[in-house]
Length: 410
Ligand code: PMP
Image 1 (cartoon, rainbow, N blue to C red):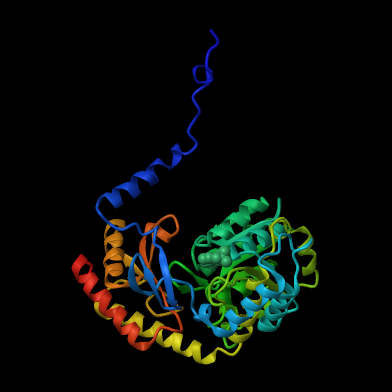
Image 2 (cartoon, rainbow, N blue to C red; image 1 turned 90 degrees about the vertical axis):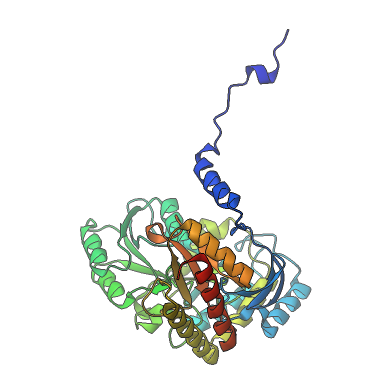
């Protein structure tokens, strides 16, 4: 009798088995009755700072909507019009049929915003890092990067096959030491971030960019979390610290201050445009919908005149930072350095309990845990919006006080 397929088939190695520890940790957490922190649904979004989440009216303190542009009337109107005029999607790559009027226009808006010669838009910020880093630094080149760099930076390094040399977070001497050890004549790219998103701290770019240049390296700075509100024109930490002219490539995203989706690189390098032909995550993917591009272009140009909003966002950041310290919470930075304030939790279990207690109070923050966080920490990450009112910030502090007392953290 012929044997059935199941009788003869060899047992397959379960390729998902390596994730068992993660499945167990998650099950343990949920069996304690905690709401799933990674499965939140926004059933209705009422404004940049309020939504109905899991059935509750909730203040949003865990989005990257720093400048509150998601509900800007002009941003929405431009998107609607472009959808009417150009349709819902591009159905193709930027280098084939996917460059529409508004892709060109958003790149013009970026050149105006940064006062730079070149701008290239990607489908996300993740892809911008993946594409630019892997295309610039290939086999035999060296990438010297902060150990706390975003996942998209690490993935860009891996994809390009360069030699990767990490240095201790924000440590100027460590950067210099690593740079001096790179073999003479090798291509060198120093990769930094303006604001580090886990702790909300800022890089000492003035010193680091100088050291990179003294040692013959090119410099790329990811300003994802600073665009729009740090620096005189909102160009980021490099502008604030006076080194923008020495940075070769700035990476950014539309998914934060701009309030849409997309990623970009701006540069003054005279050969920059060749990257459109050789950068695989730019070439081999569909271009963003025209509605997103039109909304983004309007948002970027409005951010150029966002001075008042920036001032209010800084006020919010200072008030929340001081208020949380006064309540007895341990924070990621001694002073407010950005719109992100990280509240350090004793462990994952307490962190998840605190996260849930806040949600029940009507406040959404991000629960961040390893491997996304540095030094194995569990964090409740608060990111402020220019549209949070002063009263909302006081309400938020009241919620932290009640939840922190109930969980026994303060
Ligand atoms: N760089 C940094 C520093 C980020 O924090 C993020 C996203 N959080 C990205 C890049 C990726 O941006 P996007 O959401 O547009 O993919």
